Image (cartoon, rainbow, N blue to C red):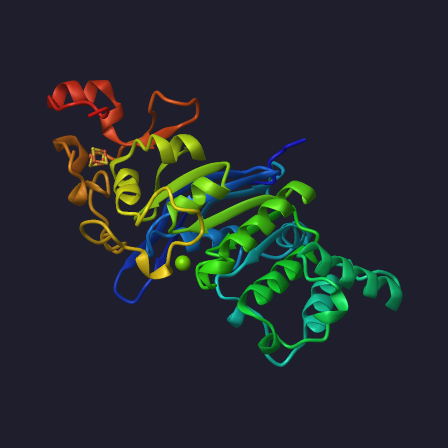
Length: 338
Ligand code: SF4
Ligand code: MG
């Protein structure tokens, strides 16, 4: 069944030298097996922090992280180790994530051994290695198994990084901008591989990206982050075709071509639109988007908007006062449908 492996409601606070930085605040996210959830936002929106918190790369300061409904400890213990092997992270940079002095065989063997999937003898290990490379379409495996990272292309390196994550036999993959550093021509191939793995292995995938068009193409569900908070979420089709939050609309309007084939936006094309994301050291009061929002009302500068149904597809919500009829009536502005 499509039972969810991960659920999280958290806020993470880093203590910096000069101030307390709320990198992410009250992010609530559920991943389900056999589904891709996209987390979309500009750089500095806190989306990578969410992935690292989910992967337990650094401890959370508040909130709750559950696997199959069971709370996971911040570190140590059987449940923590169990969690870490079931939830694997894939990084943006396949060049940095593989050790240049070690071969593909070394990286994959290590992953299989750490997670107890290396088999009982050398033959079983060899079969497990071949199976991993086959799963990421690096065939025949013997062509790649003894290569060093520098002997592979960027796309092949990312495939090895994905194979290494699969060595843990995970339930969830957290993919942080997995294609943004790769050549435009091979991005779609990697996204299609991830989608294929989702289906064949019934994985839950968290796809982190600044490229909302690729979310439309690749993700079942899309969540939009702004300044450390989630501002809109729902079915990908609904969020990208009928964006409700003014920030999501801005993201889509400023995409180079929203109908282009997904996954080919350039990493340098981020942070478009008018204005810059605010500092997380002193986030704006009320709705954090209000300094940039063309529809801002008085209430927006004071009160944090809750998640409100936007009246389209069921489950599509936006954290925006435009979807609160009482507020709109009181402020005397046009409705969100304008
Ligand atoms: Fe704009 Fe107000 Fe909605 Fe924030 S709550 S996005 S400021 S209209
Ligand atoms: Mg990032």
